[in-house]
Length: 234
Length: 234
Image 1 (cartoon, chains in turn cyan, brown):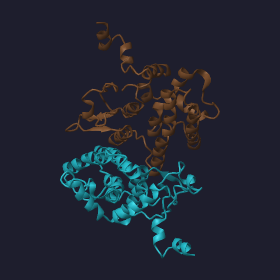
Image 2 (cartoon, helix red, strand yellow):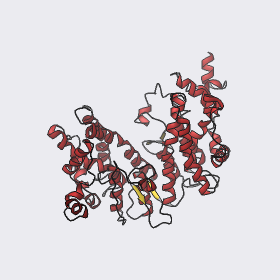
Image 3 (cartoon, chains in turn yellow, cyan):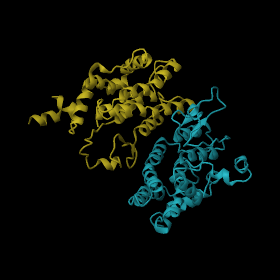
Image 4 (cartoon, chains in turn blue, brown):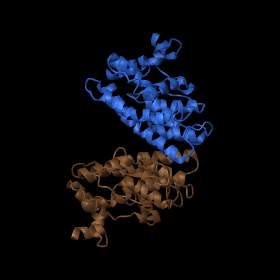
């Protein structure tokens, strides 16, 4: 699903690792019948490994990304030290506090969840502190690693917020100085660029989702050179 | 917390890896104040690494267990092949379907959750099939590995069920022939033995939990040689 933040994680690691792949986007409201063949719970992302006999399939975004990191050891995305690696994994898990608060804003709406905007900030505090302690532009050092990529999909989608609530909510530039700089630096990373959508586009998709009729093909429909568009015209 | 299945996971891997440790059990109803110093979300297990400067602490049972597996590479608990490892991780994740159904039985009671007992069986089907396909006594081969240990705490606690519902529910011996043999074999594993409690003991704790007054010290109180017992007498 083109707008799924978990599928986004897999795309980031595929791009960072320069692994060739073929993407098939699915409609999660009317799921294709074949989906449970590759993803038993009908979730995305699912990675079918077509180069291996019987074409085994992996699910769960973090499992997929860690598999890619181990299978393609060049440009490792985790620290080599087991303790540092474990600490990064914990920060990936703990980002759930931020994503939970963001979903409340995105799906329920900020009016119905008055505490959610400040929950996002509270959740982000530990990441600001962590960047300050590490003293590097990225959590992984001089370039993004697993932790950077695993939290990025929600950071990219934070640009939706102004389109929902206007200027009422902005991250405090002092409180989140390092994290805002990190976000700018991440936006320049080739893997991030390869799958990037701006806040307005994410917001437009979200609006269709909130009406109960998510436009999964939104990007394809807009591009006149694609078969989907031609089909639509005919 | 002595009866926590997630803390149990960490004990199994510490034992399998023969890593020396000092266990501190906590009361999760009246949490000690220091708990959030080592476990920011107040959860167990938490592993404080006292041999490293600043004594960093790890949380999340699977993160702790994977850290131990990487830090102490002898007797590796995961397959070396990244694909096989990823497939084992997915089976660890998917066991959540079984644990969710078990919690409904344990906490809500089987009467209030009439479908939960059959949900346990449906959830276990993929593990029976997997053991058959692998053709080995354990998921990891000739001895238990990460997948075996990560699902064991709930398998041990499945012996609670007869104490809750009597003989009404038993796993079908034909449908789960391999899994029941696996359970017997697991019970003989030294790491499993080192932290084992029988179904009656687990059931006794659960009963205190269901009354709203969990007896976290239940095992200590029963042992006349411990200070806790002496204190109780005085």
